[in-house]
Amino acid sequence: MDIDEAVGRAPSWEQRVYHVLSTDPAEDLQEGIRWYEELSAVSFDPTVDLHLAILEGESGRMDSVQRRTEEWKRRPDPLPAFAVLVGAAYLDDELADEVVPSISEALAEVLEPGWFRDRIATRLAVRVGDRELLAATTAAQEARSTRLLARTRATLAVEVVLIVVALVLLVRVAVRRRAFDRISVVVLPPAWRGRDGIRVLIWGGAISALLLFGSSFVPERPYFRVLLGATTNLSFAPLIFLAWLFLIRPSGQTLREGFGLVPTSDGARRLVLVILTLLALGQLGEGAVDLAGRWFGLSAHWTEWFDRDLVWGSRAVVGMTIFDTVILTPICEEIVFRGLLFATLRRRFGLVPAAVLSAAIFAVAHGYGALGFAAVFWSGLLWAWSYERTGSLLPSMAAHAADNLMASLSVMLVLRG
Image 1 (cartoon, rainbow, N blue to C red):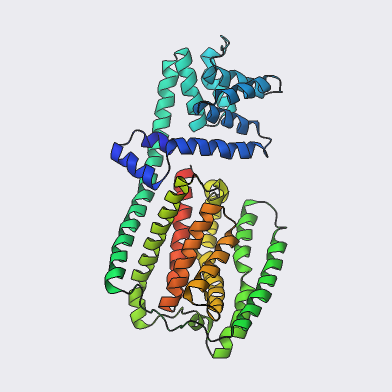
Image 2 (cartoon, rainbow, N blue to C red):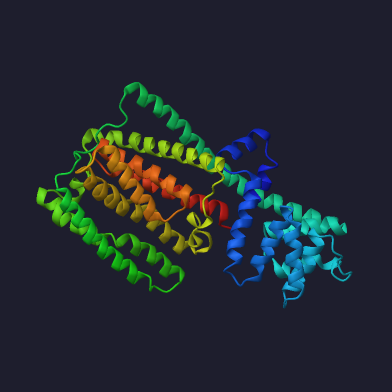
């Protein structure tokens, strides 16, 4: 919401770019209402209901605000106080004379500094003619939203650059009739038998599931949550060990050789270009998914991108979370989903069916909604194709890491204080 406020003051061309690459402010407001409605159904925090009432008031849902304030008047504190402030701001209810001089103090008691307090404070300041409160609220809103807009501009600039690079590389592919050159010596389908690969995936997956079940008993504390994330990735270790024992070692190779993690001399020089190509094509595909989602009225659920440790965690927790997300996750997931699952499927199917099946399983494993599924599915397709063409997991690992890093930084830049 703060970013939308800042974009509204930006030049018209920048507003158009933001609306194309991001979201429409009206859609953000409606989506915020849906999120808070979901949150209020499971939360006992009265502030959640207050936030929802302000969102409803800002969107013009006065009937909902009316019903909410009438109910609050019959409930225990602090809900009657909420009813007084919200009713005066959005329903033209009368404010008691003793409240008018102390609106700032009253709001400070029930709301943290931020968009919600500023919006209702602006309404009340206009209502009672408090120019000092209006000026202070406007200045706070502009200062906060301007900082966030600067961060958003940086992330959108990276997105635009990647899209331009993607278009240039697509022209290059069309002209050369070749997307990627080989980086390592792995050739698909792999040397192991398909049935052996399936056995390893089943037994290793079962052991991983048991480890994940055990990790569910980890206490709900910041450092333990980070440990739980690392455990999720390290639960793949038995599967990777079984793959080395029964699939890779019989061919006389190490894990690094078996998954193409040792580039040739020529491949090492081409690696950066391949990684940039994957990142650019990935961004182009995700942009298409986002536009299609808006066309069909779909949106990603807020839990698909929100990580409270990145937003509120200490520096140590943030560092551990990023290490898990940017290092452990790409290495483990690429070995399992591309190096083992996709490669095993290639023993039975051609490139396209194997890539589609492995990407679908990869997307389902993330547990996202329709848009999240489509974005992860597109990445899975690209990374499987890259493994097939380059003979190495290095490009997909690097692209996976860069995607996770950009997603983490986006959350931190926008939501971290």
